[in-house]
Length: 213
Image 1 (cartoon, rainbow, N blue to C red):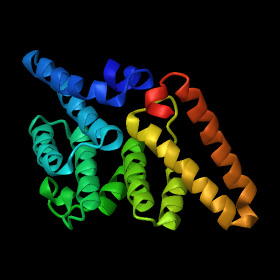
Image 2: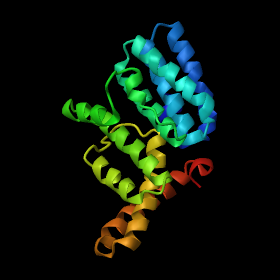
Image 3: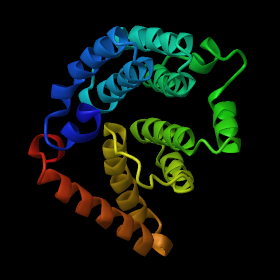
Image 4: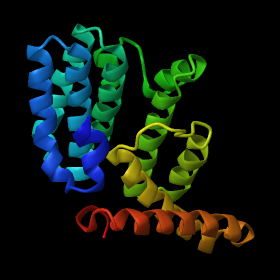
């Protein structure tokens, strides 16, 4: 957890990547299955959002990690890994439903609906983050803005900030300044959001110029 929660604020993201696999091995050897699988999630989350790891090999690993999570009855982290697998599929242009691999008949939409019904706000928020990421990098700024708006219904609260949240915050800033120019009637609101993002990034850059400069 030190490398997932704390070191990302001070050390280069890449420096923490291998530590999560080490933590998985240690957790497995000690019978701490929850921590072991949690670190597989942290590894993939870091690899995609923070390190730009090659997706050809990563996709195979995510499939294996998700399967392992469900075999170990770690359904919560299994869902997160499935969301990441779907993200990887879409970024690679692979038309496949990651959710159906472990949940026959399930789609991202139905997963979101179930999570919303069961008050699993972290899963809803993560799906919003994933969809916003895809929309932004494929140039669909309207959808990215919709996902930003939808995510506001699932606030972070006091939950830890992982790398995906840091990257997502940067994207929020890009979205906000785009719409501050495009939607003059709502310019003040979007500008305020963008300025808040800048303030956060400036504060973070004081902790790690490598990650945030």
